[in-house]
Image 1 (cartoon, rainbow, N blue to C red):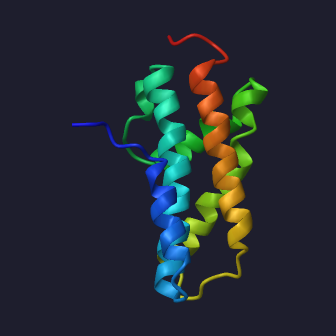
Image 2: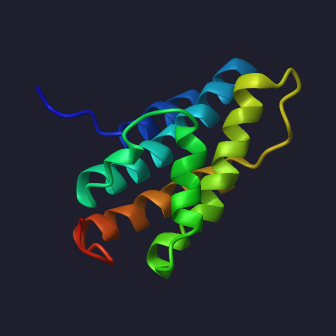
Image 3: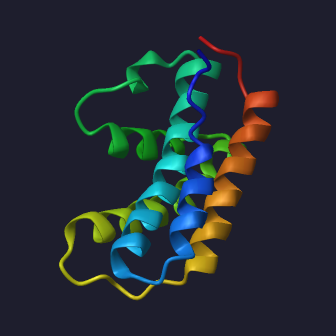
Length: 129
């Protein structure tokens, strides 16, 4: 059995975007975020062996804070788009009123995070501990 690839959520989100209804758009926003979040978290846990990010309370905030607090620009650059994607996901999952959003920007930010994490996976900025 193959290991799940978080980036596969992008394909699901893209398909959902083709449907013109609010439920599908909400699900797409959520899937774009989880593609970026899951792939970013795997960089921390699998590549860098920072196992404190596998799971636990406030995992989303902790992963985001880890990138925000990084002294390496290659890691830190992920934090802002990941945070914006997270806020879109929270709105889509919990708020009765869906905020106005630009799906093309959501897609670009997701791709940006995924590409940056791919580069980090190929060439980590520091060795695993």
